[in-house]
Amino acid sequence: MSEIAKPALSRSTVDRAAIRRLDDAWLADTWADPRTRVLLVEDGRTLVDAGDVAARLVFFSPDEAPEGERYLLGVDDATGAAYFAVSAELPDIEGGARPSGLRGIGALLNDRDAGLMVHAAALQLWHARHTHCPRCGTPTRVTAAGHVRVCPRDGSEHFPRVDPAVIMLVHDGNERCLLGRQPSWPQGRFSTLAGFVEPGESLEQAVAREVAEEVGIPIVGTRYMGSQPWPFPSNLMLGFFAEAGNDQIAVDAEEIAEARWFTRDELRSATEAGSVGLPGVVSIARRLIEGWYSDSLPGSW
Image (cartoon, rainbow, N blue to C red; front, side):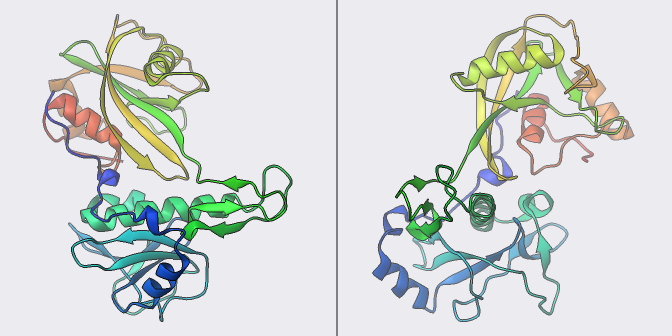
């Protein structure tokens, strides 16, 4: 297995400036600063000027930004420029910019823009789904520069939700890896196994349980690879390599319709022929597969 490149949505260069989120005077002054840049976000999407091999976010000045919930994304230490997101309807603008989501362009953004868009999309999607107090049902208000909601009736504070999920490349020690296909996927579409971490469960326990439930294979060892935020709307994907105790596949037929062992040569041949499609390059699943393979592979969904 080779060194794994950082997952596409785990990149960032901007200081989140968390210490400034309750500093109302600083926030007001910074919003008025001509260096400040604003990202508009709607339903997890923003405006992107995308090319074939690279893409860049479209920013606005504070004066150009429409009204809407405002979230501090951070400060660029090198330039002093602050970045905010505003939850608002995306406007039509001249040129090649278009509304885009992270699945489509996350891997084409540079490190700064990838980190900003993940942060903005995760916050906007959380706010859109958590508008009322879960204790008493009262509409909550946004505080801490978009990172907390407070109930005005009972004073309770509510923080952005993050749901941990394990995602694992199962292998037999070196020569073969196991990939699965969900029932809703077309024939030939394969990926790693994955599942949510349950209450009171360690990550390693979740890896072993999910693999046993989905394909009936015991796990005898795990190695952590890395993590990637996956704000669709609120997941954190925790990547592992998991060594199988045997190769006897027994799919559960509910979450997994088909699972197959692949040697490196078999996987290369199948992806080149188009009979097997792998996850896109924005996914940590692709990083796990290519890390095991020790090179890039063709083809994606």
